[in-house]
Amino acid sequence: MLNATVQQALNDQIQKEFHSAYIYLSMSAYFEAENLTGAASWMRKQAGEEQEHALKIFDFILDRGGHVALQAISQPAAEYASSLAVFEDAYAHERKVTQSIHDLYALALRENDYPTQVMLQWFIDEQVEEEKTSSAIMAQLKMVGDSPAALLMIDRQLAARAGG
Image 1 (cartoon, one colour):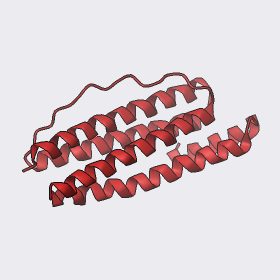
Image 2: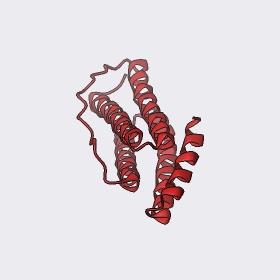
Image 3: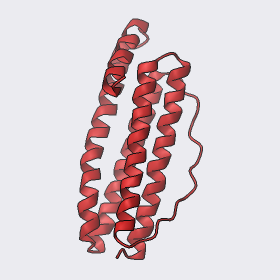
């Protein structure tokens, strides 16, 4: 069974993962409004992945005999200055999530909670990929600057990554 401290931290992480989904859905809406449907689809897929992450923790808590306590999700930003600004925000957000996962892992270590450490290893690996991907897209957007043709090419690449 989970101890109360780890359980609360995992419930907090569920909220953060669902909030991440909201952030990515808001980013998707921004890209739809900008007629960048590839980026919109990519962000929608990211939102789905964040929901899966939340449910992975949700199920873990239940599997360990714990209690899930869902928390309120705050409203994400709705306006962005540019496509680059969106991916800068996405990258900064992923770095925050990484830190949160690392903090959770450190807590599991302190509490000698080995099953939680094992479960969190998947998230640690996932965050390496998430930061790498958002950083790479951000770097490409910085390279192309204000070129509409290049932005459309990146949008097409994002559509392919999203499977759309």
